[in-house]
Amino acid sequence: MRANQDTRNIRYSAEESPPTTLAAGLGFQVVILIIAGIILTPAIVMRSADQSANVTEWVVFAGLIVCGLTTMLQAHPLGRFGAGYTLFVGTSGAFIAISIDAVKAGGVPLLASLVIASALIQFLFSHYLGQLRKIITPTIGGTIILLIAVTVFPIAFDLINQHPGGDEVPAVAGPAIAISTFIFIMGVSMFGAGKYKLWGPLLGVITGTLVAIYYGAMDFSGVNDATWIGLPEAGWPGIDVSFSTDFWLLLVPFVLVTIVGAIETYGDGVAIQRLSHRDKRAIDFKAVQGAVNADGVGNLLSGVMGTMPNTTYSTSLSVVDLTGVASRKVGVFGGGFLLLIAFCPKIAALLLAIPGPVAGAYIAVLLILLFLHGLKLIAEDGLTFDNGLIVCTSFWLATGFQSQSIFHEFLPQWARGLLDNGMTAGGLLAIVMMILLKLKDKPKRRLELPAEITSVLDVQAFVLDRAKKLGWDKRACMRLELVAEEAMAFLFDGQTRSSDKKIGVALSSEEDVMILEFVAGPTVANFDNLLQKASTKEPTEQSVGLRLLSGLCDDCKHMQFNNIDVLTVSLRSKAL
Image (cartoon, rainbow, N blue to C red):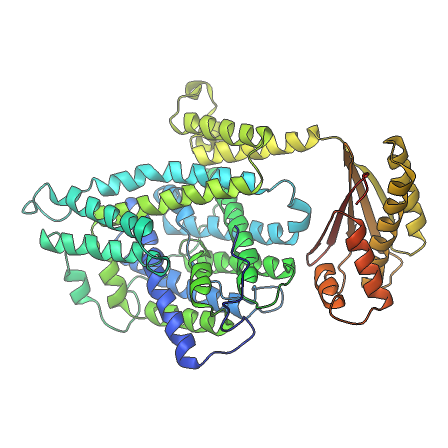
């Protein structure tokens, strides 16, 4: 996810504390923007799975609690859990279809066990984020998002076609309610000014509800009976630990969607950093891992409490961009408001009373935006022939499996249960194709050495041997030697001295370009941040090396994760 890098409009950066009234007011505004999604999404799942009103109330209550706690955790991290930025968390619409399947198969307890299991996978994904960066790419994430939208749309259409109210409500009421909701949301999204676009979904729901009131299709009995302060009547639904066949068949799609959610949070974690500081800073991938870990905590809590998984909402980015207030204080207040609303059954009951056509139109727009986000995510990798082949093959074969049009009668029973979900079939195919694509690439030459300064000579000999085979001239070879030396010196200086530390070097080349990737243990500081500081101070031995490395190579990128650092440099054989 890309974000505007012009941060001159920042009024309060992430570290600063605005007046309490401003932070509380902005936090409440964001909560109003996202509350419909947090409450309506689980309500739609429970309705579609024929669950009782009491069960729905509990799932909504638990969702609000988890979203509030996780939003606060994102703002104020605990150890490696949390981004340290204002990232609001809400119920994930990507889980709608598979959550309905889970609840139909084994009730909320089965849903809970699947959410807990997939949350553990999310922690693993975060831990190995550095190593997985070349397989779980934006192309994979974007493809699965496209498939999520396609598999959930039938549910949205079923809701749109529902007849709200009793026999006394005219048949035209349902279409009128759905069309007015959809047109209003789309109209605000297409023609509204920047700040008003954020309010489009909420205003559309209000418009559809008013049309429903006009036709007499609203049932306010649940709202009238609900108390202002209280707890849901239904108790904790429990967790299914029988690990039935349904659990194992549904685990794969849950894991795939969880990974997609982690990729989205990864994008949000990068984008929020670009928006939250006045000065230009390198992206802190440790904070990104913290954001993914906090999402994992939220999903783990969701499973334990018996509700749907959650994810970071991109609304956070839009609000920071529009208001210039990036303070973590906003996230703390927003999380607190979500907790307060959880204990106000009347607010939840009001949203739960919204007719099916309104909810269906809302979900339809959400899926359209989700589809758009998937396309944008794919575009981040560049739509090359290979990436395009992965996207198109996965999409259309997934559609075939979803409609049971591909040799369905010849598949064994266990395979039908797995592949009848188009998102699972297409997601698995996309990952397999990406792995095969990486295997097709020219093999990289690799070297692993002790993290000692003497290893520089081995690296220089390693890269020079390749350069000479490629026919590089003497000047280009000298530049290559200096780049290798300065890169190794930077990584070595930043590491804790230890005899068991290693530095891995991977070399790849295309035509006149050579790319060196250095993988080492965690270093203290980021190359880009040090280089920026060095440009404003008197030259030192370290700053001269930084400037030399930056000037000699065509591109230098330093990614810092919790467990590894990746420094990638590229240079051409031609003169600078």
